[in-house]
Length: 318
Length: 296
Image (cartoon, helix red, strand yellow):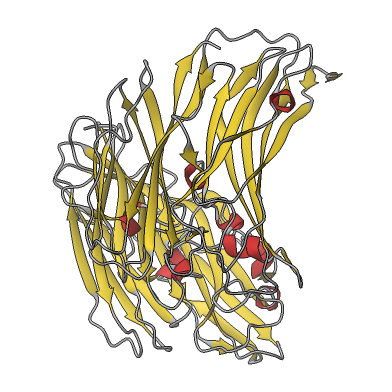
């Protein structure tokens, strides 16, 4: 499959892709597993996966409802494993798989398709791995997805939400040696609920705890806020931290050694601007945790869910 | 604590910016850690307004809904970064994003020494529509051990005159002292930033442009030209060149990576012929540069 061009070997690209339809229901739905055979290296040579792309699509079954703001992916959670190694600590929200990219803006996603029958929302998250994941023949990924949203509206019915996941990479040149250990990505996420009945909330104890046996080199802290309305309830993603005028969420983040992210609590707007990610790598030891609390100065007429994820790598043998 | 991210932030003005006769905000962040702080970015972003999706400064340091234009003056310790006021629209930049950012990202490491202060002043001009954003200032840093070389950024910028979409021919010169290396050492110029801001007060988006709130001004970038040369007469653009060709449309900057000698400067003439026939858009050209100096 690979061919030589002078002294260079050109690697053949490869994509593993599977999709699953998630039923629409309030609460935590039964997880749906993706077809593992489609996410498996069925070649007789090793492959390297360099990128993961997750796409969610949902149709809003109301004609020309421009104000509908239910958004694909906002209620989706994913559990990803490679061979027998977890890449996510349980189920992590779709919104914090990767920082929000302005090119994947939910407004554009909503304008893809609208006709007299339905209105489509399509949102993506793309992760480029800092180190490729090498899969020997027969190895593969196993992925499960579910929806998790406190309530749903009956005013804006949704079709089943279709989630597709693609692992993108290349065929490994035959002369390449198999690595002894690999840097595998890992997501740890927590979701905090700010209901309207409370003006301030603070949370967190055992969330954002490294459940691995090895230290996690954290390269990003990713946030994603979404709202749902008890009255006309949409599973919507706001793609922003709460507005400074309205929610003014103050975030207190403590690193494993107890130090604060700053001397004083930080506005989420300041911490997670635009791309909703904070950079600056650090090592999270096994069984150690990052403490996060959110304090909302005021609450609007809808409820907020804010998710925070730590994203990093750890070294393991596959 | 070395190796952990560290954020310094403060709320700025919140309220109506109509008219913008506001006193400038000034904030001082002090590095109270025992470490050097590597500064990754400094940002001023807006929350609230009529569309919280645009919670950050939409466009080019311009809050599109209100039309307010921000300028900042930044100092690292005793060292001026912006040489007085610099328009944010001329001095903000980030990588790989098809939209301007309300922040300047430093791709080379720049540092605040322990005990040093980061001074930022922000002023607000020309608000038009009646929205009431809340502004926030933040600096994202990481605590690091003492680096081998202490580098500080240089951010210089110029704001051109406001013009309507069909205002016809014009020509403006960027004053020589604006993109000027006043220091005794050479300055590494990473990029020259060029933008056409589309802002405030319009009811119809310009032909080919994005809906209200965007500052890309697709049509205008073909009609507005920049012509540049160095202090010694060396041309760095052979001819007047359309903004869209010179300043990568997505990143709105020209990656130059050259050394501007002490007392050297970049001469720039911005000219054009705005002949769009629809919309009530208003444009302003911005030219800036992002550079670095090694001071220790």
